[in-house]
View 1 (spheres, rainbow, N blue to C red):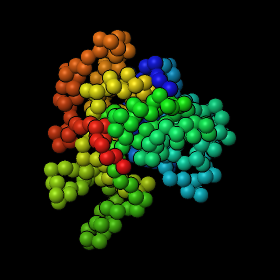
View 2: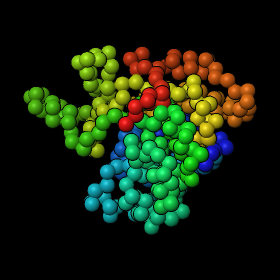
View 3: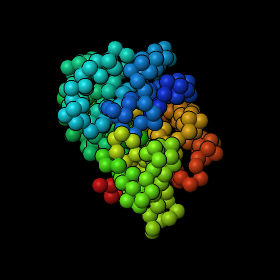
View 4: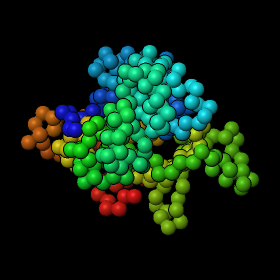
Length: 311
């Protein structure tokens, strides 16, 4: 199932960010709150989502809501009212991993689009099509897939495909507060338990001390992130030629100005390819615009796109 023109999707942590990302060229924003979604750049209430949806729809953009948290028995009872509230607020789709979310959405908001995101386990078209038969309209491909695996999926998919093309990725998650426990064990508890995204904490391996892995804790536990940033801009045309439906720029742990600049660059590339695929050519100046704002301690890499062993 190929796309006519790929969507540019960016997570937003506030109404202001969502508006600025759409103005910069994003076709869709991903929002949510920590109670239901994980690893979001910020929290957006139902009222925030309503305001974002009004702006987005007025500018031919869409709003997706992340419900990718681990669903407990206690959370089950709240899913249907929350999803109904999302529908009333104007959300266009829900991103889910747990089938409990799918069932709740089909009951509370049967017209709501459903995007299946099982993190690292969404690795083949057969499983994606299975979720399509259950009501999903999109699969979020695992970031561990390489280029051949991604492009090879598209002709066999009966639903849309979303891939990450830029930014940080999650490499470890635990529901436990690992950093707080470690600090307490050392006899130096953190005042105010400030171990969130703004703290700037990172891990360093003894064997690779030049690589820093950001780590933070929130209501959902401990998150360890990659030491580099994916950037497939140079070979974006391969994904466009294959017919990938949605390109995600990850904004987590990035300044808003950086994300806006990246959005504008990818917007130029997508529009240039759509205007004339035969004459499309990557422009080095696009990459230079990103490099000027890139954190010098974070390498721009192809991620898993050209790695053979990915599992």
